[in-house]
Length: 250
Image: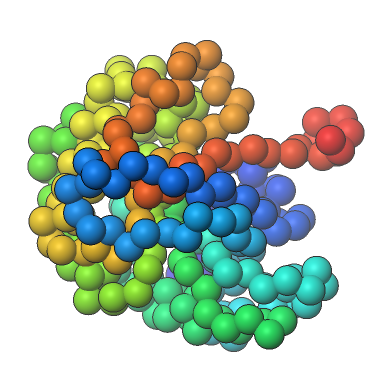
């Protein structure tokens, strides 16, 4: 089975045409409230990229070609994994992370995996196929699965950026605001629970990413989804340029 990131159709189109470039601004968050000694991300701007299927090729030829074309090393490599799929296990993803960690190009050596860890699947990928409800996650119903990743990433030992419940202010994922009755409190409780399971396992190499969408179709204050400084190491926002699909490039 070929591992492919699951995106909405228009996002798959964008990813197939060109690299999805993710710029994350590291924000110096207060650390005095932290419950874990998470690996602290450098306070800087780093260059990262998403390319379909790149880590499945250990030499990552496509990503190396992109880096060469722009003369810049990708220090962050973005990837997607869905909880409900056969490839949603740590044992499957571990070799991909090894490839990312050892990636070298344009006189740069090594890269940090950025994993968007999606609580849905298997197909069909619809908001109604809500196999992992936020309330059930917060209640501990999926702790065995979550713990398997926490233990695996702790043993891995290298920095990993983990993006959980991304674009929560949208309505296209089962965990999205207003979908399946979800509230901000549900999202925060589920996010904190997943974080706390990793903390309990001692996976301090995991850096937590909080990632709303710039579009914000819910029209609510995005700060109401924020789980708190004690649970976030990186703040990110997804911004999409639809190019010709939207009429013109912007």
